[in-house]
Length: 441
Ligand SMILES: Cc1cc2nc3c(=O)[nH]c(=O)nc-3n(C[C@H](O)[C@H](O)[C@H](O)COP(=O)(O)OP(=O)(O)OC[C@H]3O[C@@H](n4cnc5c(N)ncnc54)[C@H](O)[C@@H]3O)c2cc1C
Image 1 (spheres, protein in one colour):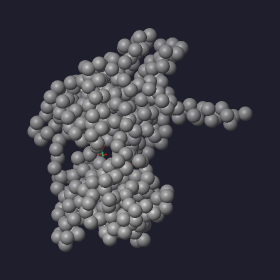
Image 2 (cartoon, helix red, strand yellow; image 1 turned 90 degrees about the vertical axis):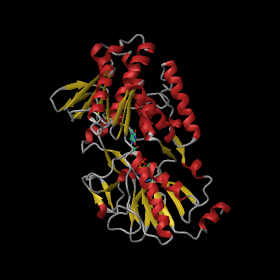
Image 3 (cartoon, rainbow, N blue to C red; image 1 turned 90 degrees about the horizontal axis):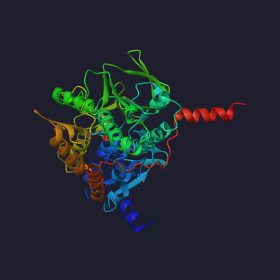
Image 4 (cartoon, rainbow, N blue to C red; image 1 turned 45 degrees about the vertical axis):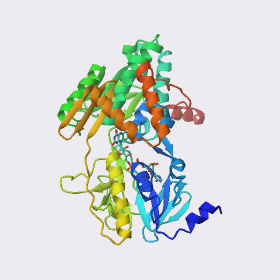
């Protein structure tokens, strides 16, 4: 056994197991660094992913490594922290172990920060056919897919075929959907027009569909209207009061009865918490989150906490819990660190208080919206504020520098440069066709 491992194993502190190194989990680990706890971070990935900028990887503005940060780099200087790459499969709260795909992990204190996954609301065909944006791997799939569509459009037999290749349907008018639709509109204006000269760029159509009566429903009405105006000025068709009900990989069906041929549907219409079997008593099925008290402790369990997207903390004025956003996850983690330290030193824990710092979304160059209390700004100022906040929130100096350089290049040169199809995206329909062609006599 190496000396470092021996020292870690011999630490005379309670074993804290943190499942998930997203915004909440990583903040937790950083907060417990150097404190009297033996911390073990478990994650199925070997890196933290900065999800707010995933859409820029998906739309070829940023490289994947500029928004991902290896856990081992972060924890290398932390002698009381270890990392294991594995998938947590379930929890046994009586035996106090987490079952993983690599074996059992014992805990004294368990912190579940598994985040959320895309919610298809039970529509299995949609889940199979539509693209989603939650991980770097999915962002790279989207990037490959739209570039492959552009290339395929050049081989299209007729106009209808070509339009289908260039028809992009984004479902969900929240920040992710709005940002994706805006970024695709910029690609049409720059990449498609300039570099696919043989294609008529007007044939690329972008649809943003939402069942609500406005986009960015959680924002102020003023900024919702502003965002919609920006999108429409960029040529995005904003289709409100309509739901996408089905997609077979070729044709999208709407609740209005309309049908539209498209090779790409991006589903950004909701998320659900990633729950671990074994803690059903604290699950809130409709919300797909764990019911936690004001200390983030799972209701009905001892020494088990949940943070971030997977935690549902009800309080007056927050009947649906806190928003599933990075600041809520980070604040809960910081608060829990303080509470664990308080508890360790014999003081009582204090109930969590959320500080809403506002919301922001960017639609395109010089076009963003920011809500901060009663202040609702848009345009250049909001865009600069959005860039500054996201830059500062990234993990690691190298990532910040890389993103800054990426943006400087993109906005000065009007080019989305990261347009490599390295790992071609194989459409599920194609896989099924190939499989069936092999098995059919
Ligand atoms: C495309 C997109 C854009 C977004 N934009 C914004 C934005 O602009 N502003 C904002 O504030 N928020 C934004 N969000 C939301 C924000 O990213 C989440 O609220 C935040 O990541 C939640 O943090 P978390 O720590 O709860 O979970 P996450 O950050 O999702 O981390 C969960 C971690 O758990 C790991 N994990 C999951 N299951 C297991 C398992 N079984 N075993 C081991 N490890 C596991 C995952 O690999 C991951 O590392 C966006 C989200 C997406 C998807």
